[in-house]
Image (cartoon, rainbow, N blue to C red; front, side, top):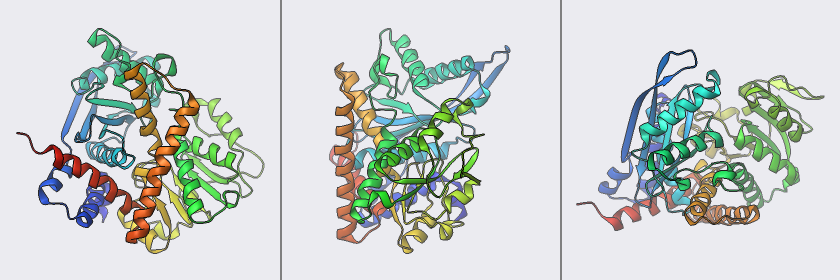
Length: 421
């Protein structure tokens, strides 16, 4: 049990094994899908502002290319390790297959806390890391995107670096770029918008009026803040929010617009120092255990475990983060009747609109934001309906149903292509 919680890749493999058993996959295809296809580890020097040189370690992992080029973000975090990146790459494979876009899964990361880098050091680190992994990157091979502690500016540096090496501009080599250099309208809000849509659709299936829902969101970065904002606009009451500085609770509902404005005016876009009448400061642990209708974990992996699952009071969990719930907690919550919309479905909005950005870049033809949002809604709601139907017909949790659909699609693609040579 402890080993699963410490190692996200073991969790990812456990989830795959559950689906593979139900699908009765042959051992040959299991062996292929259970491990990444390619892994690159790089140790690279970066010149710091004071003239010294530091060596950083980074990773790029490609899980499976059976359905097309691989897609996945790049994160900067001091706790990045190879097993985390392997797990995230595998989850991306299932996520892309679940929403039926023609990608496999990849992920990248650098072991660094960007808060301690100047903007010049961050740019030099980004460009050198992009150069180190450039052997894998390309619009037809591997298309990165933003992730934790990376943003549109970081993506712009990567695109420019690859373009300088090629001798011409390659906008489709990366997604999540600024709009003025080929990014897509609607991309920044896409993951949070997808989370909102999954809350809306699950509430509809469970006959819960939106204006009756009390929402708690763990994480107030791009995903969490966007989801909270859009749900607030739908009439839901967001009663709890947390970020790295702790939790904020107000039973009558938080002023999400004011909180979003506050973060834009303070360093690192954090809520530290936010205060308003009726707002109570609580710990991150307390936030997860608040009495609410919907809990949206939108921060890190392994936040809901067997140690706190019995104290989770939410009736529904919509996973905005990747891997926030361990298998042990998943089982406990399912037995308690908690509805869990899994990460590979709930946070797929980002990769869907990244796909749109890639298509627009290849065609050099760009869409209106309304078109982007409409297409996003059509795809992610369609995937939700398929998963819900499988779950009802086979009496399975939504996570297992989602994995059945995704793993089957990837397995079929790999079987059809065969084994080379």
